[in-house]
Image 1 (cartoon, helix red, strand yellow):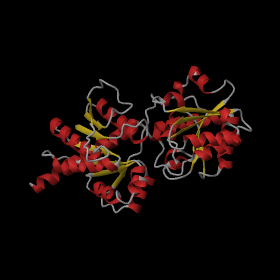
Image 2 (cartoon, helix red, strand yellow):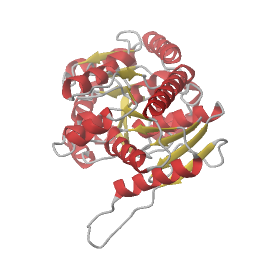
Image 3 (cartoon, one colour):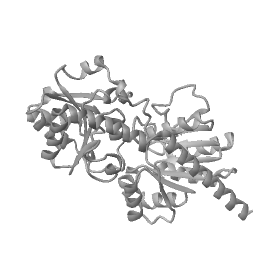
Image 4 (cartoon, helix red, strand yellow):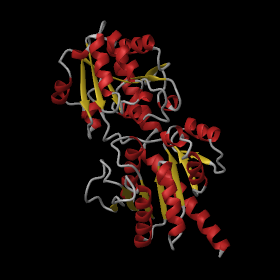
Amino acid sequence: MRIGIVCHPSIGGSGLVATQLGLGLAEMGHEVHFISSTRPFKLLDNCDNVYFHDVEAIYYPLFSGSLYTFALTAKIVEVVEQFKLDIVHAHYSIPHSLCVYLANQICTRKFPTITTIHGTDVSVIGQDKPLYPLNQFSINKSTRVTTVSAYQRDYIRSNFEISKSIQVIHNFIDLNQFSPKRASRDLRNTLANEDEKIIMHVSTFRPLKNISAVIRSFHQVVGKINARLVLVGSGPELEDTKKQCQTLGIIDKVNFIGHVTDIESYIANADCVIQPSYTESFSMVLLEAMASAVPTVSSNIDGIPEVVEVGVTGFMADPDDVDLLASHMIGILSDAGLHQQMGKQARARAANLFAPETKIKQYIECYESAIAEFSSTDNQQI
């Protein structure tokens, strides 16, 4: 198949999933065309069967910002027509799914479309009143709709009037890329002292990530365990987080790493990963930790219970139950046997339930059924 993938170029989240999917499809012999504002971080040059088409910004003096949706729509039209794509897959509904729909109306070569909803495209952006009807429209106009968890499917059905069936295809993880073998003594020594346990949190530092609970629970842990908190990422609450650490007197036990493009190298050096988010459609960070044989402590909300097996691969608590979050971390870090067992079971769960081969096969079957349905409908119209 000749497949178009429209995605964000983000380091993690939907951009990472879309990139890994495209690379997996290309390895199987499919021709994959990525369409994005910049090259996705994990998309290397000179990959067989992979093409990248950047969306160049359009500016007019009449408008204060770039006309990105117009530019993206035009690029999709160009790529579909030039490379005769069989199908286009939009990751993230707004604006990608809508732009794919508009491109399909403009193209002389019609094509089936897939929309994958990752989470905040319907729970945050999708709830914005002016965008809500656009979001709902573009989802309903897709040939097929998928999402990353059963929780997210049910959320969409409850909050939007969607006539389409919604297929759940969980995210997947490359166990060669995310592996305990990635742990490095040299890198670990840059993160913490030799005798310190590493608690890691990977974040966009937005309110929904609940950074305050991370800091408050770590404050309790560090009173009983010689540990260091490693914060990876950046975002709007970063400065407030630093102030909170200073107020609690733990700033010297916290490392702020900022953005990294090789998160697999960092996460493998953690002794525990904490993610007490207020909302998570799936949580790739928890899956990355599991594949790296790192036990997790997280909130018990939304799609997380589909990823973590409580008491087996990690522990959960209510997002603001700081005492219980801290207790879980202390339990993991103070019991070497439990830590090792949980890490082993976490990696096994990642391999058994979230293997790339299984999930990519599901997407291929989704593409094939969409193409068959689209061809049948097109023939009936003719």
